[in-house]
Amino acid sequence: MKKKMLYIVTTAVFVVGLCILYYYPRKVSFELAKEIEKPYSEFNRIDYVGFDYIEDAERFKFFMVYYYNKASCIKAELKGYSLIFVENLSKELNFDRYDYIITYQKKLKELRHSPYLTKTEDGLYHVKRTPLIPTWDSVQTDKVYI
Image (cartoon, rainbow, N blue to C red; front, top):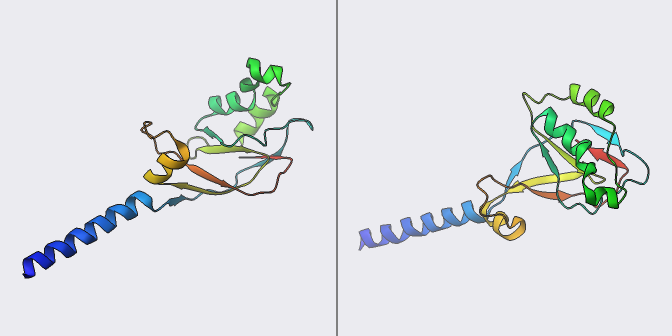
């Protein structure tokens, strides 16, 4: 009888532990590195629901400058920053030690991840990397945050 009770308790603890690992969101700590003005006053990417993940200076240049050379951006008359500005800004960032996230016109309040959030909010459960799910401040700003 004692073995059966031990088995039930052990199984219950194991199931509860698995549920916590699957459902409970883990927070990713971050800090604001840079806050810059929009490239021009009509710039509008407030509807962008994600963020740009930057791990080196080349990717930083791509998302700040070259990304806006694609046809959809040209059609929407969306332009990025000047290359000189971005190169000077990238010298202030430490890509050897940190990765960066760029958010447009809204502050990032929280970054979370869990297998459950991956399946329900990200939809990229087939991607092997852990997706980060953002929580945004509701205030629209005229800034770009790094």
